[in-house]
Image (tube, rainbow, N blue to C red; front, side, top):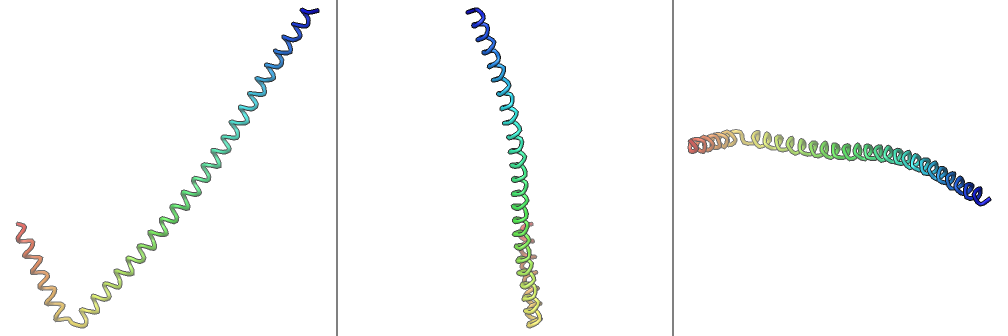
Length: 109
């Protein structure tokens, strides 16, 4: 009878080990699938945040470009206005600037 009891215990341990293997396989599969889902959602979140950051940078770049364009247009308008006020003085100043640049370029040779 003791031999049968030992055999029954051995079979019970064997069944318990098989059940443990099955449970471990199920747990591994569940964790793996969960991680795949986490990675997918993390990837989607990174893409969304990247797009938002890119859009913000693009908007700031466009705003800066618009401000620079406005400043440039104002400067051109101011110069045109000054030339219209004093055309002869503007011509003399441009002539002197040309002579000065010419002298500087001649010096470098």
